[in-house]
Image (cartoon, rainbow over all chains, first blue to last red; front, side, top):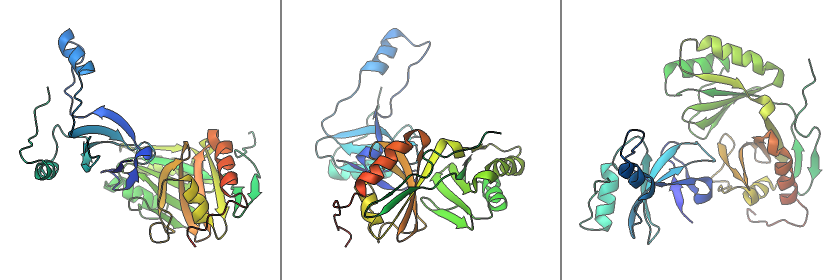
Length: 109
Length: 189
């Protein structure tokens, strides 16, 4: 059971109040892109053992989408932040780097 | 005009707390960024109360304004007044980016009352119902078993619950089940 904090409403609730939305920080390839790019965008998801960024929606609360940084092994949640950003805020990066020395934010393709 | 009826008129159940359907309740959804001046002043003007802080509600007399999300408020009042409330918001917010809709008939309202209301609620929602965590004045949207619901406390022994009208019977069933005599837990002492 995960406990997540919705950054829009500031409330910490348990997992069942939210809906997962898959990998975060994807670069979208839509109409006009090549078949390869579109297929990669649609099907090639990361499946890391460790630090992972996911989209979640506070379905039964504020109704907003946000991004959660968590660890798929320990289920530790590093934090959550609004979805209107293309990369994690510095405090999230620092928190992850403190736990995993040498970790750096990678460029998602 | 046809006569308006609530979802389960007069439904009630006496368990170790009593459950009843409240009946027709005026509800107006107001969407728009609460952090902006047009919305805050319109709420003050139309409802006569301040925009509540996150997860709270402000009330005055028959009017209550509940915080639903950073860009949604629910304005509650007498059923017959809801169309006038919508019209008042439309007038006050003319030219701004907003939406006001009368959703009274889309919802059902229940009230549970008794000494053990916190416990009955705690059986159904993933929310900390202890006296330190939830107090009158707070408003919470959440999941009640399998459906969306919102609730608040009128006082220590009364909780009101709003759900969609389409699931009113389900929610009434849940509340009856949770309030069944013999199912007392006594967790909150």
